[in-house]
Length: 357
Image 1 (cartoon, rainbow, N blue to C red):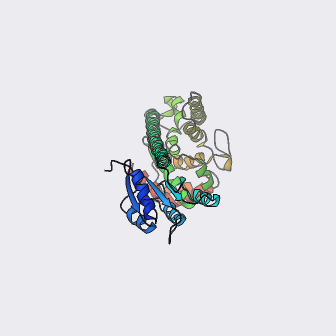
Image 2: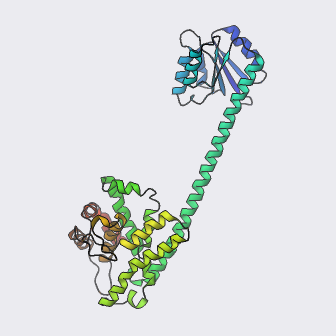
Image 3: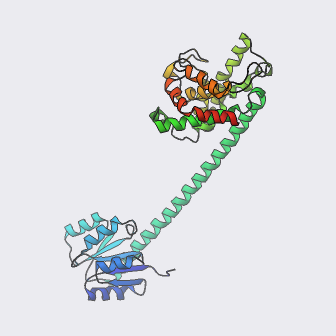
């Protein structure tokens, strides 16, 4: 491990090398190199803290060297001070445009040369410290974000489990429907279906967890209806239908408390629109076609498929094949035709989930 900062001097004039080396050797580890070729040879094993580079050298001049350094990721960040006996503005401008940190002119003033080097090394040290602090800050933000997401996930799971605990007839429904939606979204992304809208969602980490709250409104439905061991009457069904609107309203109230707005926006959409139908005959608002948010249209397929493949006191479990046929037959009436085509391509995945959970 080096104890002193390393300076590389590059100049074809040996006298200049000797003078500069003598000025710097008490403060730095100095390598005096007579050509650009020697510089690149040393750079293979030693990365300096700064390079003092003569411009007017035979063969490969200082500007040529600078272009190579800046084009190579291994060397691009090394600060370079050009050394020149000239003072033409054109030369200085060209060097600065190539990325030079500074210019010094020959003959050298020891005090000025040392101060220039000291200043630029201090700047590099400050840049490195700022980068370290920024990296640490990014890490802290990521960790805090991760903690928040884990907290949200825990709260969501508890609420979802509470809903399922009350609705004893639909065990496992929430977790299965989330997996169904994930299958559909993955295939939509792969096939470019509604790709602009999917990309507009932004943070996908909130999308799938939000589906767990699609039946939140069932908390407000009485046990006599929610867990009735038989088919609902017309009046009972009308009461059951209110769970969509009540769930959306409950989530809106959560949002008013200042919680995660983006997540709750998705959850409200899913809760309030997953019973809408493509032909406009659904509830609670009778939305039609693309008026129904995409998340609601996705959830509708997942929700109905799971209901079909699950046993109820008033019906037998449908097979995955029969359930798929019903979904496909609902294209253009109950479901978005484009999403039904996506479902067709992943129905085997749906069947595996239905049969194993």
